[in-house]
Image 1 (tube, helix red, strand yellow):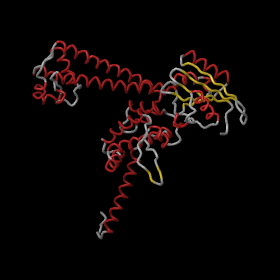
Image 2: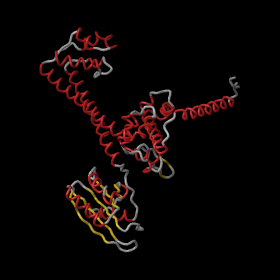
Image 3: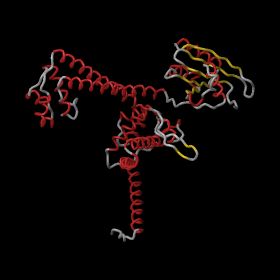
Image 4: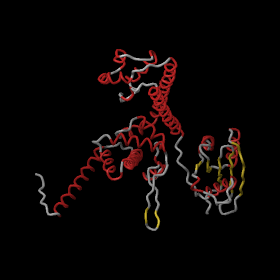
Length: 412
């Protein structure tokens, strides 16, 4: 390996210890190697930072278990007035020789590869984007908690003999919540009270719903229902506070948000989640294929003896992937869009799941181009492409009919 750096440091990060290896020396000469071990508490990490500053090492690479690299990254990021290169590398790309693996050798191997310029760091967005990412990922967890709590309430009502959720499209809409509140207060419900609880068209099924509510709750059951329903309301209030914080943060990236919101099916929440995962600076990704592979929306290559075997998409970024798939499902229901028509054509050939992933990949490619060029989504461009495809398809059909001996008369 040809060295290109005079000073390089490799870190092997674990939960309790950090093994650091410093390699220093002139290029072409045998370098000096120094290995130190630090703890993962703040004072120990400060000692690591001071050592880096003392040695003047501006190139650091680390391999980490889980999320233990994050506090180290945050601490080293401002070093040398932010003029420092910190790489978080994938362990798959730099495996050491089997049978010789220790933490000391791992740190030395990382430093050796970094000094030779053979390491490529993972994508780490800027700090404002990372802060937005904290909020968007937390919102996803809160939404899961709300869904779990709704299922818990529904399960309790079903077990207590109340089956009205089968007659309401949304059991936790205005009508459903009014019924739950009345059951908490009275324990049972009659026709007059039910008529006050139901809203709009649900009154047309009042007789069916009344039969499904022909029961009563004991004092304990009413108390328990009140407890779990108030917890649901608290979660929804908390979700609103989180979304308010997300809106405040995403307004700092208003230009990128407006670009993404120009795509049908993407609102502020979806735009914030996408920006939080990929950022607004696309220079980290050479092209759309790279960002799709990073997101886990590209199949791998498995070829042997000239034959390509079936492969699955890789894991990638689950938060970005799930959000793009959600947007894809929304677009698939808008039949007048070019992307929707493209989805249904792929679905006929590949099935719904593969078509959803394919549409998510197409969306990410569009988003990459939009953020890189600053040009918003324009449905008219795709409309011209769709008309051109239809003309080509019609031409192929005419040629096939003429080949079979039919006379085709062009419309006037």
